[in-house]
Amino acid sequence: MSGCVKISVFWLILNVIFQVNATHLTGSFEPSRDFFKFLIKFGFQKTERHSPRDSFGYIYGNITTRHDTNLPVNLTLAVLDRMTFLEGFYGNRSLMDRELACQRMFSSLDRIAYSSECNSHAKADYLRQIPCRRNQLCWDEDTPANVVSGSQFTFVISDLIQPR
Image 1 (tube, one colour):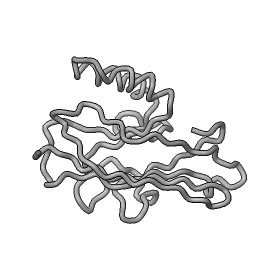
Image 2 (cartoon, one colour):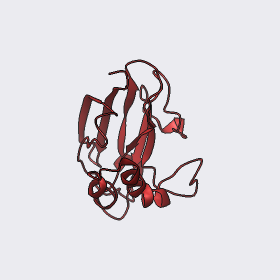
Image 3 (cartoon, helix red, strand yellow):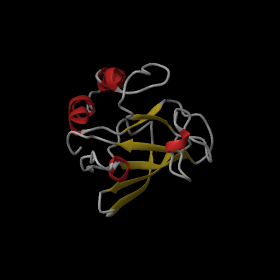
């Protein structure tokens, strides 16, 4: 179990009347056994134009290993809207060739997902490389001011067009 990754993720939905809903997940992931792990399905209301900051959604948390060791494979936490998930990830999860499955999963996502190194012009902040070092931000968390206190990463969800 040296490659086991502990997953602890919070997500929070705030709406205009400040109703709060949250989910807390704790579990483990064994990369040598589990190629794909679906964590949770959730939705966010549409961001209100007149009070956007009060109607953003937030996904934040910590993902660490039991011991600060390097894993034999790279892991990616992906927060995806329904269409991106169904087309890119869910449909390819059962391919026997894991390399091909990964290529297909990320082929469309690579065009739209923000990456400071590879795609700095994209607006969609969908990905974090995990696990993160204990008591540190995830290495690809590029906006520390947006990170919820006590967390290693934060996704700020905003969509003025439709609920997601």
